[in-house]
Length: 384
Ligand code: PMP
Ligand code: GLN
Image (cartoon, rainbow, N blue to C red; front, side, top):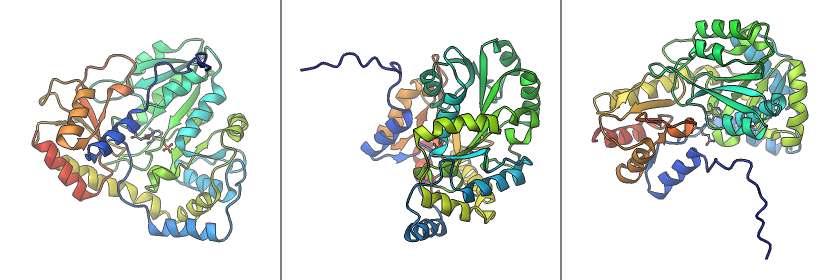
């Protein structure tokens, strides 16, 4: 029998994603799943009815390669309204199969073998493999430990002739930190007059707390002229399972991105694009998100406040970091496994967001859950 020993793995060091691993463990042990980031409540009935409507009307064949013009137009309108920049729906916006595909395709568009790409750790898990698969060299910089802000001096020092791209994620998964206006200014100064591209992962753009502002790269002339700005309807409309997102970029970048996009997915499913474009026309369907999640954040924090966990700040996203150093000496994998199997609450350890050894005693909890579920989970955590 043939042995097939010549597979020669492209990602020898990478196993199954921590999100898949912990969600499976939650199911296997019947634990409350606060691990993988997804809501445990349904999306709007109106949105479901719209999808149904377009399916019944017969919109079930391929969409145009870059996405339906209706949805690209609505995105263009929204981005202009929120950030002041007009992206041309014909040439500068592409609908993707979630932000994950937008990110991967953006990396493929710009990375050539040997190019250096600066990422910040803890880093969302899809960046590193996407960089490596495209022959890039990830250059990891640790976020400041106290508030997970970006150490700009270190960024300046890390830039070389080979720096092709800097990847920024704000609001930030897993830490919940957000960029301030001063960060935008620092980055503008660093990239000005340099051939450096930017990938801005803004999937939590509408989940920012305490009346703070989301600073999109779209709102900066210096940044937007070199940036892929990426977002996801999975976060905005509680539909992570629909895998629909988008990318905005200047025409010269978008032209190249589409050359790859057309051979990765060709196009994203039609009825959902049509439904989303109609649904987002009602602005409150987008702008109600901040308050909705702020209530959940406040509830969860108030329930955990008097426990032995230390709550880290949470300015955005639906993730809360908990420091468990007062509770256990276990490493974060062991502690997450213990919580899932023995306590009945599944969480995410932070080590998979790091390339080097991470000794911090931090876990990530997703609070995009029904209030009653948060209460039961918090009760279990409070007893530790
Ligand atoms: N980037 C970040 C920071 C995320 O948290 C996620 C998913 N939760 C994604 C990208 C991927 O989004 P999507 O599910 O739309 O592919
Ligand atoms: N982004 C989600 C999280 O951070 C998970 C997405 C996935 O499972 N790939 O939990």
